Length: 344
Ligand code: SF4
Image: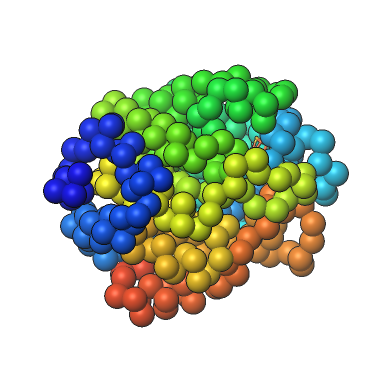
């Protein structure tokens, strides 16, 4: 395995070997190989983005989420005008890559409203992705026509038994629906496809291997799209959920290294769920995208502090502080990586 660490084509068995307890003894060596591979494939660039929460209304009952239908939080859905104000506030901080986030509520956030919001915001942004309810190919085609170029949709857990336990009711309770939906987004021509497992729900080693399999399949099927994987750990939220399989900092580092070495061309995303010092130390292991200055409740960039956040964030640094950290470590923070040619 030592000779193979820098290889571009690790077999699944080799990828699995990077996730073992025994491999943890070689984490430093693996980290150096992951760092070199990231430099080779991505240079020194780290893309910065910010989420904009459009709605915290949701008909699902995910046990780990503060937006679940049973949570007694203050519910709010932004109008297109308010969403535009949020976008302007985020853009004023330097961001150009925006991620529109909403709970799953076809009543509060129908696709027509998402289209309207996307059309309003798109001229201001270099990249516009969505992390919202799943759609079919026709739905994603409508969003693409409105200017959306990326879809993020986490499977949450690839363990079917755990999935059923964590999603007892609502449309999200159908295991397989999210894998089908991200595939539909690829068929609709989305340029950026993001997947992830919510760490803490099931054995992280099995989740990492499933992520690798899923990402490779997306790369094979939707070779024109850029595929990214996220490694969010469960944070405190209004549902008071305690993760049954907590993941330590060192295990998170091993997972990131294994993902990089197994998926040399995939983006790896690290959000503000993690504390600032840990984010900085995980960066060289293969991270290529970071959120910065995030808030996780609708209207959070322009309104006074209030309740209704999805989960608690750990890294409270402003976007320019994160960019300064990146520059100080020799990275190029990327606010805008391409220009879209818009029609209509
Ligand atoms: S994770 Fe998403 S679908 Fe589940 S309750 Fe939260 S917002 Fe709704």
